[in-house]
Length: 199
Image 1 (cartoon, rainbow, N blue to C red):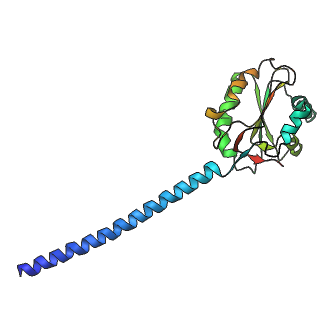
Image 2: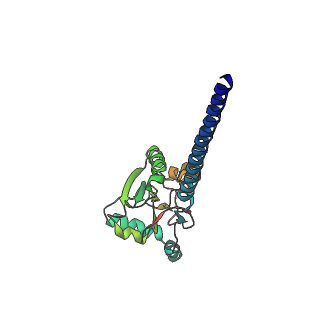
Image 3: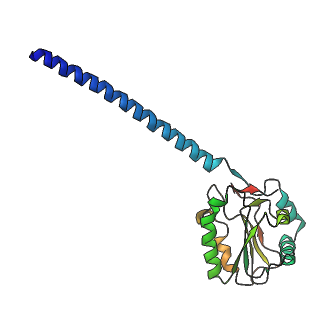
């Protein structure tokens, strides 16, 4: 009787271990699948959408012609926008990269306000002719107190737009001053990051 009970207990433990092993295998398979999915998604988000800001060379060709800042400033003023001490934040409402720029844009806006500048939001969808000056979005255009171009290009370089890889933080202090020599603004054509072509 005791040996029969012992055999039943032993069989119960073996079956329990087999069941436990099956559960471990299932949990391990689920964990590995989740890890692979996270790595694949991260790789896509970090590397797939990266492109050159001026992929076609459109902006570089304008730089070679000269006076990009002057022509852009005139065009904006013709559209009714003041350009003195202004920072224009240009977005395309359909661009998948906008969310990556949003936090950085808010930091820039605060710094512009602290530098006695004015922030202006522009939509590429509402001003399609702006595509002539901007090969991609999200983008930023900075003018000083004399309406001279300080910067034209993307907020930052890389997969995620943030202050660590920003082009514009050091330039923001020039917004409220008249320090830019005539048409000497930085037109950034060589950045690589998450941008949407404007054409």
